[in-house]
Image 1 (cartoon, rainbow, N blue to C red):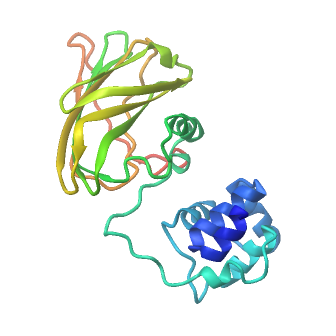
Image 2 (cartoon, helix red, strand yellow; image 1 turned 90 degrees about the vertical axis):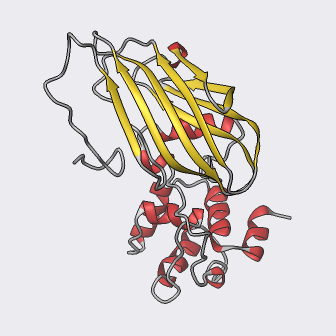
Length: 269
């Protein structure tokens, strides 16, 4: 059966919308532009949420946008509208944001995750981070050296690995980044492109639901590029985060500044 026809017949709404967008070959930016030409204003982030099932069109106020989507995507009238219903409840946890929404290197990250056979939208979805600590070494030449990470997570389903992402400085050679596993895991497959490195940390055994895992790993960045500071991306709410800097004693900074932003495209505060 045709995948699109099957998705429209079976639903749910987000799966049918995602299949229709993929079949048409439109980016979310182009889809948003087509909708705007019909005087329908829908944010690109909203379209992303809809196709991933994170949010649901309002059945009382959002049907106009859904009908416009049917028109732009060349779908039969009401084929999406009939799939719009009450918002689906998850298991009480907010779904993680997409890498493409958060960071400029999102497309490269998604590509590397796909090479590992991992759904970029569902990576680590069954693990909830309860505590994260990181110790970052800055060398005297202002380059970033080692990043040591300790991750305490709880499994919400049977799971046997954690997939980590490291972004070096733009223009850096990811081949000069080394990864080593510590407690509770061993290093699995590693994929690199430009300054992005994606790697698996395979657990010693299959975790049962609601079981806690304590794992540690280290990343040694030997690219030698000046480091303006360390940043950590959180795709979903997590427990406490502790960041420690190990600084050269003869080259201490005058001060440390913490900056927070919701995505790479938004201003820092």
